[in-house]
Length: 560
Image (cartoon, rainbow, N blue to C red; front, side, top):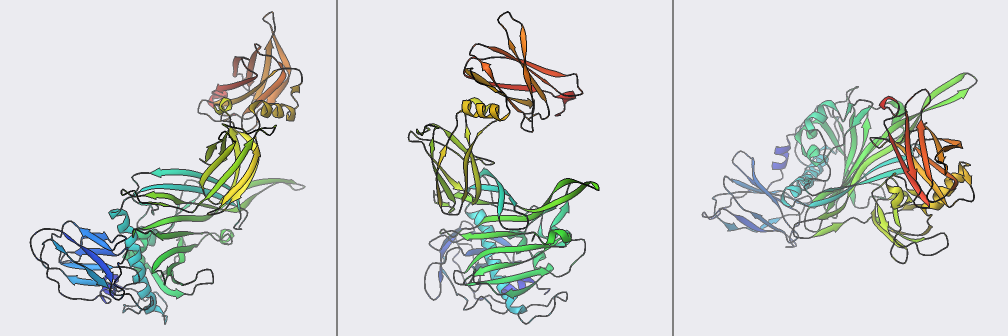
Protein backbone atom coordinates (compact mmCIF):
# COMPACT_ATOMS: atom_id res chain seq x y z
CA UNK A 1 0.00 0.00 0.00
CA UNK A 2 2.03 2.90 -1.28
CA UNK A 3 -1.05 5.05 -1.08
CA UNK A 4 -1.19 8.73 -1.71
CA UNK A 5 -3.38 9.67 1.21
CA UNK A 6 -4.62 12.87 -0.36
CA UNK A 7 -5.87 11.08 -3.45
CA UNK A 8 -7.65 8.40 -1.44
CA UNK A 9 -9.49 11.13 0.47
CA UNK A 10 -10.46 12.77 -2.80
CA UNK A 11 -12.00 9.51 -3.96
CA UNK A 12 -14.58 9.84 -1.18
CA UNK A 13 -15.43 13.51 -1.74
CA UNK A 14 -18.62 15.05 -3.11
CA UNK A 15 -17.74 17.94 -5.44
CA UNK A 16 -20.03 20.82 -6.23
CA UNK A 17 -19.73 24.55 -6.83
CA UNK A 18 -20.61 27.06 -4.16
CA UNK A 19 -20.81 30.81 -4.70
CA UNK A 20 -20.50 32.95 -1.58
CA UNK A 21 -21.43 36.65 -1.64
CA UNK A 22 -18.44 39.00 -1.64
CA UNK A 23 -18.05 41.62 1.06
CA UNK A 24 -16.90 40.89 4.60
CA UNK A 25 -14.46 38.22 5.71
CA UNK A 26 -16.20 35.69 7.94
CA UNK A 27 -17.98 32.39 7.50
CA UNK A 28 -20.20 30.55 9.97
CA UNK A 29 -22.92 27.95 10.02
CA UNK A 30 -24.12 24.59 11.28
CA UNK A 31 -23.09 21.13 10.09
CA UNK A 32 -25.99 18.66 10.10
CA UNK A 33 -26.57 15.01 9.33
CA UNK A 34 -28.17 14.86 5.88
CA UNK A 35 -30.73 12.22 6.91
CA UNK A 36 -31.48 12.93 10.57
CA UNK A 37 -30.97 16.70 10.26
CA UNK A 38 -29.29 16.64 13.66
CA UNK A 39 -26.21 18.79 14.40
CA UNK A 40 -22.93 16.95 13.85
CA UNK A 41 -20.61 17.50 16.80
CA UNK A 42 -16.82 17.40 16.41
CA UNK A 43 -16.69 17.82 12.62
CA UNK A 44 -13.55 19.48 11.21
CA UNK A 45 -14.34 22.35 8.82
CA UNK A 46 -11.37 23.24 6.60
CA UNK A 47 -10.83 26.19 4.28
CA UNK A 48 -8.27 25.39 1.59
CA UNK A 49 -6.33 27.54 -0.88
CA UNK A 50 -5.87 26.80 -4.57
CA UNK A 51 -2.89 24.51 -3.83
CA UNK A 52 -4.80 22.48 -1.23
CA UNK A 53 -3.09 24.13 1.72
CA UNK A 54 -5.07 24.90 4.86
CA UNK A 55 -6.18 28.53 5.25
CA UNK A 56 -8.22 27.94 8.40
CA UNK A 57 -9.72 25.03 10.30
CA UNK A 58 -12.36 24.83 12.99
CA UNK A 59 -14.25 22.21 14.96
CA UNK A 60 -18.01 22.17 15.35
CA UNK A 61 -19.24 22.54 18.92
CA UNK A 62 -22.00 20.68 20.78
CA UNK A 63 -24.59 22.48 18.63
CA UNK A 64 -22.83 21.64 15.37
CA UNK A 65 -21.78 25.28 14.94
CA UNK A 66 -18.57 26.54 13.40
CA UNK A 67 -17.21 30.05 12.89
CA UNK A 68 -14.28 31.13 10.74
CA UNK A 69 -13.22 34.76 11.15
CA UNK A 70 -11.36 35.15 7.86
CA UNK A 71 -11.83 33.47 4.49
CA UNK A 72 -9.06 35.37 2.71
CA UNK A 73 -7.31 33.15 0.14
CA UNK A 74 -9.84 30.31 0.43
CA UNK A 75 -10.79 28.39 -2.72
CA UNK A 76 -12.38 25.25 -1.29
CA UNK A 77 -14.22 24.07 1.80
CA UNK A 78 -13.92 20.57 3.23
CA UNK A 79 -15.78 18.88 6.10
CA UNK A 80 -14.37 15.75 7.74
CA UNK A 81 -15.95 13.68 10.50
CA UNK A 82 -15.28 10.08 11.42
CA UNK A 83 -18.26 7.98 10.34
CA UNK A 84 -19.26 10.41 7.58
CA UNK A 85 -18.42 10.78 3.93
CA UNK A 86 -16.03 13.72 3.44
CA UNK A 87 -17.69 16.77 1.91
CA UNK A 88 -15.82 19.16 -0.36
CA UNK A 89 -17.12 22.25 -2.13
CA UNK A 90 -15.46 24.92 -4.19
CA UNK A 91 -15.41 28.30 -2.54
CA UNK A 92 -15.85 31.53 -4.52
CA UNK A 93 -15.57 34.99 -2.97
CA UNK A 94 -14.52 36.31 0.43
CA UNK A 95 -17.70 37.81 1.75
CA UNK A 96 -19.27 37.27 5.11
CA UNK A 97 -21.82 34.50 4.98
CA UNK A 98 -23.84 32.03 6.97
CA UNK A 99 -23.39 28.62 5.39
CA UNK A 100 -25.09 25.51 6.75
CA UNK A 101 -23.61 22.21 5.58
CA UNK A 102 -24.87 18.65 5.49
CA UNK A 103 -22.80 15.48 5.59
CA UNK A 104 -23.81 11.92 4.81
CA UNK A 105 -23.23 9.14 7.33
CA UNK A 106 -21.45 6.16 5.80
CA UNK A 107 -23.53 2.97 5.86
CA UNK A 108 -20.44 0.99 6.86
CA UNK A 109 -17.05 1.98 8.26
CA UNK A 110 -15.50 -0.65 5.96
CA UNK A 111 -15.98 1.06 2.63
CA UNK A 112 -13.41 0.37 -0.08
CA UNK A 113 -11.16 3.08 -1.50
CA UNK A 114 -8.93 2.94 -4.53
CA UNK A 115 -5.22 2.95 -3.68
CA UNK A 116 -1.92 2.26 -5.38
CA UNK A 117 -0.66 -0.92 -3.69
CA UNK A 118 2.53 -0.83 -1.66
CA UNK A 119 4.81 -3.53 -3.07
CA UNK A 120 6.31 -4.09 0.40
CA UNK A 121 2.93 -5.19 1.78
CA UNK A 122 1.60 -8.70 1.11
CA UNK A 123 -1.59 -8.74 -0.98
CA UNK A 124 -4.77 -9.03 1.08
CA UNK A 125 -8.43 -9.19 0.16
CA UNK A 126 -9.36 -6.63 2.84
CA UNK A 127 -6.72 -4.08 1.82
CA UNK A 128 -9.16 -1.67 0.17
CA UNK A 129 -11.57 -1.88 3.14
CA UNK A 130 -8.69 -1.39 5.54
CA UNK A 131 -7.64 1.77 3.71
CA UNK A 132 -11.22 3.00 3.80
CA UNK A 133 -11.27 2.49 7.57
CA UNK A 134 -7.88 4.22 7.77
CA UNK A 135 -9.27 7.31 6.07
CA UNK A 136 -12.14 7.37 8.56
CA UNK A 137 -9.65 7.03 11.41
CA UNK A 138 -7.60 9.91 9.98
CA UNK A 139 -10.66 12.15 10.26
CA UNK A 140 -10.89 11.28 13.94
CA UNK A 141 -7.17 11.89 14.45
CA UNK A 142 -7.45 15.26 12.74
CA UNK A 143 -10.26 16.23 15.12
CA UNK A 144 -7.91 15.48 18.03
CA UNK A 145 -5.30 17.87 16.63
CA UNK A 146 -7.76 20.63 15.71
CA UNK A 147 -9.39 20.38 19.16
CA UNK A 148 -6.30 21.62 20.94
CA UNK A 149 -6.01 24.55 18.51
CA UNK A 150 -9.65 25.67 18.56
CA UNK A 151 -10.62 24.82 22.14
CA UNK A 152 -7.47 25.15 24.32
CA UNK A 153 -8.13 24.04 27.85
CA UNK A 154 -6.63 23.93 31.32
CA UNK A 155 -5.62 20.33 31.90
CA UNK A 156 -4.92 18.65 35.20
CA UNK A 157 -2.81 15.61 34.42
CA UNK A 158 -1.72 12.69 36.59
CA UNK A 159 1.46 10.78 35.82
CA UNK A 160 2.32 7.36 37.17
CA UNK A 161 5.09 4.79 37.42
CA UNK A 162 4.03 1.25 38.18
CA UNK A 163 6.09 -1.79 39.08
CA UNK A 164 4.33 -4.97 38.07
CA UNK A 165 4.54 -8.39 39.69
CA UNK A 166 6.89 -10.10 37.23
CA UNK A 167 5.26 -10.14 33.80
CA UNK A 168 1.70 -10.15 35.17
CA UNK A 169 -0.92 -7.38 35.18
CA UNK A 170 -0.87 -7.06 38.97
CA UNK A 171 0.52 -3.75 40.24
CA UNK A 172 3.03 -4.33 43.00
CA UNK A 173 3.97 -0.70 43.68
CA UNK A 174 3.03 2.65 42.21
CA UNK A 175 4.14 6.29 42.23
CA UNK A 176 1.72 9.08 41.24
CA UNK A 177 2.47 12.73 40.53
CA UNK A 178 0.28 15.68 39.63
CA UNK A 179 1.00 17.98 36.71
CA UNK A 180 -1.23 21.03 36.33
CA UNK A 181 -0.44 22.47 32.90
CA UNK A 182 -2.42 25.66 32.40
CA UNK A 183 -0.85 26.31 29.00
CA UNK A 184 -0.59 22.74 27.73
CA UNK A 185 -1.55 22.39 24.08
CA UNK A 186 -2.03 18.65 24.35
CA UNK A 187 -2.29 15.98 27.00
CA UNK A 188 0.17 13.56 25.39
CA UNK A 189 2.66 14.03 22.57
CA UNK A 190 5.43 12.05 20.87
CA UNK A 191 8.86 13.71 21.23
CA UNK A 192 9.84 12.83 17.66
CA UNK A 193 8.24 13.34 14.26
CA UNK A 194 6.62 10.56 12.27
CA UNK A 195 9.41 10.64 9.68
CA UNK A 196 12.06 10.14 12.39
CA UNK A 197 10.14 7.34 14.09
CA UNK A 198 9.40 5.49 10.85
CA UNK A 199 13.00 5.86 9.72
CA UNK A 200 14.89 5.25 12.97
CA UNK A 201 12.39 3.30 15.05
CA UNK A 202 10.49 3.81 18.30
CA UNK A 203 13.51 3.50 20.62
CA UNK A 204 16.91 5.08 20.98
CA UNK A 205 19.95 4.36 23.13
CA UNK A 206 20.02 6.30 26.41
CA UNK A 207 22.83 6.76 28.95
CA UNK A 208 21.96 3.52 30.78
CA UNK A 209 19.25 1.81 28.73
CA UNK A 210 17.04 2.23 25.70
CA UNK A 211 14.44 4.99 25.66
CA UNK A 212 11.13 3.96 24.09
CA UNK A 213 8.51 6.15 22.42
CA UNK A 214 4.83 5.84 21.54
CA UNK A 215 2.82 7.33 18.66
CA UNK A 216 0.49 10.30 19.15
CA UNK A 217 -2.27 11.63 16.88
CA UNK A 218 0.20 13.71 14.83
CA UNK A 219 2.38 10.68 14.12
CA UNK A 220 -0.53 8.47 13.07
CA UNK A 221 -1.99 11.20 10.87
CA UNK A 222 1.27 11.73 8.99
CA UNK A 223 1.74 10.41 5.46
CA UNK A 224 5.09 9.00 6.60
CA UNK A 225 3.22 6.60 8.87
CA UNK A 226 0.72 5.72 6.15
CA UNK A 227 3.53 4.92 3.70
CA UNK A 228 5.64 3.04 6.25
CA UNK A 229 2.98 0.59 7.44
CA UNK A 230 0.68 -2.07 6.04
CA UNK A 231 -2.97 -2.13 7.12
CA UNK A 232 -5.62 -4.84 7.48
CA UNK A 233 -8.85 -5.42 9.40
CA UNK A 234 -8.79 -7.27 12.73
CA UNK A 235 -11.85 -8.57 14.53
CA UNK A 236 -12.77 -7.38 18.03
CA UNK A 237 -13.25 -9.68 21.01
CA UNK A 238 -16.20 -9.76 23.39
CA UNK A 239 -14.58 -7.02 25.49
CA UNK A 240 -14.90 -4.61 22.55
CA UNK A 241 -18.58 -4.55 21.51
CA UNK A 242 -19.41 -2.57 18.36
CA UNK A 243 -15.72 -2.05 17.60
CA UNK A 244 -13.53 -2.85 14.63
CA UNK A 245 -9.75 -2.81 14.64
CA UNK A 246 -7.40 -1.41 12.04
CA UNK A 247 -4.24 -3.49 12.38
CA UNK A 248 -0.95 -1.93 11.33
CA UNK A 249 2.52 -3.42 10.98
CA UNK A 250 5.76 -2.08 9.49
CA UNK A 251 6.01 -2.47 5.75
CA UNK A 252 9.73 -3.07 6.00
CA UNK A 253 11.27 -4.81 9.00
CA UNK A 254 14.87 -4.02 9.92
CA UNK A 255 16.82 -6.08 12.42
CA UNK A 256 18.26 -3.22 14.48
CA UNK A 257 15.18 -1.00 14.47
CA UNK A 258 12.63 -1.18 17.29
CA UNK A 259 9.24 -0.87 15.62
CA UNK A 260 5.61 -1.17 16.65
CA UNK A 261 2.82 -3.54 15.64
CA UNK A 262 -0.70 -2.76 16.83
CA UNK A 263 -4.27 -1.80 16.17
CA UNK A 264 -6.37 1.36 16.15
CA UNK A 265 -9.83 0.56 17.53
CA UNK A 266 -12.94 2.37 16.28
CA UNK A 267 -16.47 2.29 17.71
CA UNK A 268 -18.72 1.83 14.67
CA UNK A 269 -21.90 2.81 16.54
CA UNK A 270 -20.60 5.91 18.32
CA UNK A 271 -18.48 6.75 15.24
CA UNK A 272 -15.49 7.51 17.43
CA UNK A 273 -11.88 6.51 18.01
CA UNK A 274 -11.45 4.40 21.11
CA UNK A 275 -7.77 3.58 21.57
CA UNK A 276 -4.50 2.38 20.08
CA UNK A 277 -2.80 -0.74 21.41
CA UNK A 278 0.65 -1.73 20.21
CA UNK A 279 3.64 -3.86 21.12
CA UNK A 280 7.30 -3.36 20.35
CA UNK A 281 9.13 -5.45 17.77
CA UNK A 282 12.84 -6.35 17.79
CA UNK A 283 13.26 -6.22 21.55
CA UNK A 284 15.56 -8.60 23.40
CA UNK A 285 14.18 -12.17 23.53
CA UNK A 286 14.06 -12.19 27.36
CA UNK A 287 11.99 -9.01 27.32
CA UNK A 288 9.46 -10.20 24.72
CA UNK A 289 7.58 -12.41 27.22
CA UNK A 290 6.82 -9.31 29.31
CA UNK A 291 4.73 -7.91 26.43
CA UNK A 292 6.43 -4.50 26.08
CA UNK A 293 4.19 -2.03 24.29
CA UNK A 294 1.72 0.73 24.97
CA UNK A 295 -1.77 2.12 24.82
CA UNK A 296 -3.23 5.51 23.94
CA UNK A 297 -6.96 6.12 24.41
CA UNK A 298 -9.27 8.83 23.05
CA UNK A 299 -12.32 10.49 24.56
CA UNK A 300 -14.84 12.66 22.74
CA UNK A 301 -16.34 15.36 24.95
CA UNK A 302 -19.87 16.74 24.75
CA UNK A 303 -18.57 19.99 23.25
CA UNK A 304 -17.06 18.10 20.30
CA UNK A 305 -13.47 18.19 21.55
CA UNK A 306 -11.52 14.95 21.13
CA UNK A 307 -8.72 14.42 23.66
CA UNK A 308 -6.17 11.76 24.47
CA UNK A 309 -7.27 11.01 28.02
CA UNK A 310 -4.97 8.08 28.94
CA UNK A 311 -1.57 6.89 27.77
CA UNK A 312 0.92 4.30 28.99
CA UNK A 313 4.05 2.41 28.00
CA UNK A 314 4.81 -1.07 29.34
CA UNK A 315 8.54 -1.79 29.41
CA UNK A 316 10.93 -4.22 31.06
CA UNK A 317 13.37 -3.39 33.86
CA UNK A 318 15.98 -5.42 35.69
CA UNK A 319 17.09 -5.47 39.29
CA UNK A 320 20.49 -7.00 39.95
CA UNK A 321 20.53 -9.63 42.66
CA UNK A 322 23.42 -11.65 44.10
CA UNK A 323 23.19 -15.05 45.75
CA UNK A 324 26.04 -16.78 47.59
CA UNK A 325 26.22 -20.45 46.67
CA UNK A 326 28.76 -23.25 47.08
CA UNK A 327 30.21 -22.07 43.77
CA UNK A 328 30.68 -18.54 45.06
CA UNK A 329 28.79 -15.31 44.57
CA UNK A 330 26.43 -15.54 41.60
CA UNK A 331 24.89 -12.39 40.13
CA UNK A 332 21.76 -12.40 38.00
CA UNK A 333 19.16 -9.90 36.81
CA UNK A 334 15.61 -10.18 38.08
CA UNK A 335 13.31 -8.94 35.31
CA UNK A 336 9.95 -7.30 35.89
CA UNK A 337 7.50 -5.23 33.86
CA UNK A 338 7.00 -1.59 34.66
CA UNK A 339 4.55 0.93 33.26
CA UNK A 340 4.88 4.68 32.87
CA UNK A 341 2.14 6.97 31.66
CA UNK A 342 -0.64 9.21 32.76
CA UNK A 343 -4.16 10.38 32.25
CA UNK A 344 -6.31 13.44 32.43
CA UNK A 345 -7.96 14.04 35.78
CA UNK A 346 -9.84 17.21 34.93
CA UNK A 347 -10.21 19.53 31.93
CA UNK A 348 -11.69 23.04 32.01
CA UNK A 349 -12.41 25.26 29.03
CA UNK A 350 -12.58 29.08 29.04
CA UNK A 351 -16.39 28.97 29.00
CA UNK A 352 -16.18 27.10 32.36
CA UNK A 353 -17.29 23.79 30.87
CA UNK A 354 -15.52 21.08 32.88
CA UNK A 355 -14.94 17.36 32.41
CA UNK A 356 -13.78 15.07 35.22
CA UNK A 357 -12.41 11.57 34.87
CA UNK A 358 -14.19 8.80 36.80
CA UNK A 359 -11.31 8.17 39.22
CA UNK A 360 -11.33 6.62 42.68
CA UNK A 361 -11.70 8.14 46.16
CA UNK A 362 -10.81 7.37 49.77
CA UNK A 363 -12.95 8.13 52.83
CA UNK A 364 -11.19 7.20 56.06
CA UNK A 365 -11.96 7.68 59.75
CA UNK A 366 -8.75 8.63 61.58
CA UNK A 367 -8.74 7.85 65.31
CA UNK A 368 -6.18 8.13 68.08
CA UNK A 369 -4.77 5.15 69.95
CA UNK A 370 -7.52 5.53 72.57
CA UNK A 371 -10.27 5.64 69.90
CA UNK A 372 -10.99 9.38 69.85
CA UNK A 373 -11.31 11.29 66.53
CA UNK A 374 -7.84 12.34 65.38
CA UNK A 375 -8.97 15.82 64.32
CA UNK A 376 -6.44 17.83 62.35
CA UNK A 377 -4.40 14.78 61.38
CA UNK A 378 -2.80 15.13 57.96
CA UNK A 379 -2.97 11.80 56.14
CA UNK A 380 -0.81 11.42 53.02
CA UNK A 381 -0.62 8.55 50.54
CA UNK A 382 2.91 7.25 50.06
CA UNK A 383 4.77 7.89 46.80
CA UNK A 384 2.14 10.36 45.64
CA UNK A 385 0.92 13.96 45.93
CA UNK A 386 -2.37 12.93 47.56
CA UNK A 387 -3.18 14.09 51.11
CA UNK A 388 -6.13 15.16 53.25
CA UNK A 389 -6.76 16.70 56.68
CA UNK A 390 -9.11 15.17 59.22
CA UNK A 391 -12.15 17.26 60.14
CA UNK A 392 -13.35 17.61 63.79
CA UNK A 393 -14.89 14.14 63.49
CA UNK A 394 -11.65 12.59 62.24
CA UNK A 395 -12.94 12.11 58.68
CA UNK A 396 -10.48 12.44 55.78
CA UNK A 397 -11.50 12.45 52.11
CA UNK A 398 -9.08 12.18 49.19
CA UNK A 399 -10.35 12.26 45.60
CA UNK A 400 -9.09 11.77 42.03
CA UNK A 401 -7.12 8.62 42.86
CA UNK A 402 -5.61 6.71 39.97
CA UNK A 403 -6.53 3.01 40.14
CA UNK A 404 -3.94 0.96 41.99
CA UNK A 405 -2.50 0.07 45.42
CA UNK A 406 -1.80 2.69 48.08
CA UNK A 407 -0.51 2.94 51.63
CA UNK A 408 -0.77 5.91 53.98
CA UNK A 409 1.39 7.84 56.43
CA UNK A 410 0.73 10.64 58.92
CA UNK A 411 2.44 13.97 58.33
CA UNK A 412 3.37 15.29 61.77
CA UNK A 413 4.51 18.96 61.77
CA UNK A 414 7.44 18.33 64.12
CA UNK A 415 8.79 15.55 61.87
CA UNK A 416 8.07 17.27 58.57
CA UNK A 417 11.43 19.09 58.61
CA UNK A 418 13.14 15.71 58.78
CA UNK A 419 11.11 14.39 55.86
CA UNK A 420 9.72 11.62 58.06
CA UNK A 421 6.14 10.40 57.90
CA UNK A 422 4.59 8.18 60.55
CA UNK A 423 3.50 4.90 58.93
CA UNK A 424 -0.01 3.54 59.36
CA UNK A 425 -1.62 0.15 58.86
CA UNK A 426 -3.75 1.53 56.03
CA UNK A 427 -3.12 -0.36 52.77
CA UNK A 428 -5.82 -0.44 50.12
CA UNK A 429 -6.56 -0.99 46.45
CA UNK A 430 -8.78 1.55 44.70
CA UNK A 431 -10.67 1.02 41.48
CA UNK A 432 -12.02 3.43 38.91
CA UNK A 433 -15.21 5.31 39.86
CA UNK A 434 -15.29 3.77 43.36
CA UNK A 435 -14.77 4.88 46.97
CA UNK A 436 -12.76 2.97 49.58
CA UNK A 437 -14.05 3.22 53.17
CA UNK A 438 -11.58 2.58 56.00
CA UNK A 439 -10.67 3.31 59.61
CA UNK A 440 -7.06 3.92 60.64
CA UNK A 441 -5.46 4.30 64.06
CA UNK A 442 -2.74 6.95 64.02
CA UNK A 443 0.31 7.15 66.25
CA UNK A 444 1.63 10.31 67.83
CA UNK A 445 5.21 11.33 67.12
CA UNK A 446 6.09 10.30 70.70
CA UNK A 447 4.62 6.80 70.42
CA UNK A 448 6.22 6.35 67.02
CA UNK A 449 9.65 7.29 68.44
CA UNK A 450 9.17 5.04 71.45
CA UNK A 451 8.39 2.08 69.19
CA UNK A 452 11.54 2.79 67.16
CA UNK A 453 13.58 2.79 70.37
CA UNK A 454 12.08 -0.50 71.48
CA UNK A 455 12.76 -2.10 68.10
CA UNK A 456 16.38 -0.89 68.27
CA UNK A 457 16.68 -1.97 71.94
CA UNK A 458 17.64 1.56 73.06
CA UNK A 459 14.65 2.21 75.31
CA UNK A 460 14.93 2.82 79.06
CA UNK A 461 11.77 3.43 81.05
CA UNK A 462 11.54 6.31 83.45
CA UNK A 463 12.25 9.37 81.34
CA UNK A 464 9.73 11.93 80.18
CA UNK A 465 11.33 12.85 76.83
CA UNK A 466 12.91 11.18 73.82
CA UNK A 467 14.93 12.07 70.73
CA UNK A 468 14.32 11.39 67.04
CA UNK A 469 16.92 12.53 64.50
CA UNK A 470 18.07 12.16 60.95
CA UNK A 471 21.43 12.64 59.26
CA UNK A 472 21.19 14.39 55.90
CA UNK A 473 23.60 15.81 53.36
CA UNK A 474 23.34 19.49 52.45
CA UNK A 475 21.43 18.46 49.33
CA UNK A 476 18.83 16.72 51.50
CA UNK A 477 19.89 13.12 50.88
CA UNK A 478 19.88 10.69 53.84
CA UNK A 479 23.30 9.52 55.03
CA UNK A 480 23.58 5.78 55.44
CA UNK A 481 26.15 3.70 57.36
CA UNK A 482 27.02 6.60 59.67
CA UNK A 483 27.73 5.98 63.37
CA UNK A 484 25.70 8.15 65.72
CA UNK A 485 26.89 8.54 69.32
CA UNK A 486 25.00 10.61 71.91
CA UNK A 487 26.26 12.17 75.14
CA UNK A 488 24.28 13.75 77.98
CA UNK A 489 25.54 16.86 79.78
CA UNK A 490 25.91 16.43 83.52
CA UNK A 491 25.07 19.05 86.16
CA UNK A 492 28.79 19.99 86.45
CA UNK A 493 29.05 20.63 82.73
CA UNK A 494 30.87 17.41 81.88
CA UNK A 495 29.60 14.97 79.22
CA UNK A 496 28.65 11.35 79.71
CA UNK A 497 28.54 9.24 76.57
CA UNK A 498 25.68 6.78 76.42
CA UNK A 499 26.67 3.20 76.02
CA UNK A 500 24.77 2.54 72.79
CA UNK A 501 25.47 3.79 69.27
CA UNK A 502 23.33 3.74 66.15
CA UNK A 503 24.33 2.87 62.58
CA UNK A 504 22.09 4.76 60.19
CA UNK A 505 20.37 2.75 57.52
CA UNK A 506 19.32 4.01 54.11
CA UNK A 507 16.90 6.55 55.65
CA UNK A 508 19.55 8.14 57.93
CA UNK A 509 17.26 7.99 61.00
CA UNK A 510 18.37 7.51 64.63
CA UNK A 511 16.55 7.66 67.98
CA UNK A 512 17.25 7.73 71.73
CA UNK A 513 14.95 7.03 74.70
CA UNK A 514 17.39 7.02 77.68
CA UNK A 515 15.65 8.74 80.64
CA UNK A 516 15.79 12.15 78.99
CA UNK A 517 14.06 15.01 80.84
CA UNK A 518 12.91 18.44 79.65
CA UNK A 519 15.85 20.83 80.11
CA UNK A 520 18.54 18.20 79.37
CA UNK A 521 21.20 19.00 76.79
CA UNK A 522 22.55 16.35 74.42
CA UNK A 523 25.57 16.22 72.15
CA UNK A 524 25.18 14.28 68.90
CA UNK A 525 28.31 13.08 67.10
CA UNK A 526 28.14 11.55 63.62
CA UNK A 527 31.19 9.79 62.18
CA UNK A 528 32.14 7.36 59.45
CA UNK A 529 34.60 4.44 59.57
CA UNK A 530 37.91 5.25 57.94
CA UNK A 531 37.38 9.03 57.97
CA UNK A 532 38.54 11.64 60.46
CA UNK A 533 35.71 14.05 59.65
CA UNK A 534 32.76 14.08 62.01
CA UNK A 535 29.69 16.24 62.65
CA UNK A 536 28.90 17.43 66.16
CA UNK A 537 25.66 19.11 67.18
CA UNK A 538 24.23 20.25 70.53
CA UNK A 539 20.50 20.02 71.23
CA UNK A 540 18.34 20.91 74.24
CA UNK A 541 15.13 19.18 75.27
CA UNK A 542 12.46 21.88 75.40
CA UNK A 543 9.59 19.43 74.86
CA UNK A 544 8.85 15.77 75.39
CA UNK A 545 10.19 15.07 71.89
CA UNK A 546 13.46 16.49 70.64
CA UNK A 547 13.65 16.48 66.84
CA UNK A 548 17.24 16.78 65.60
CA UNK A 549 18.39 17.23 62.02
CA UNK A 550 22.13 16.77 61.53
CA UNK A 551 23.30 18.24 58.23
CA UNK A 552 26.77 17.33 57.00
CA UNK A 553 28.90 17.25 53.91
CA UNK A 554 29.74 13.64 54.67
CA UNK A 555 33.24 12.21 54.24
CA UNK A 556 35.03 14.35 51.65
CA UNK A 557 31.65 15.72 50.58
CA UNK A 558 30.30 12.30 49.63
CA UNK A 559 27.33 10.35 50.91
CA UNK A 560 28.91 7.32 52.62
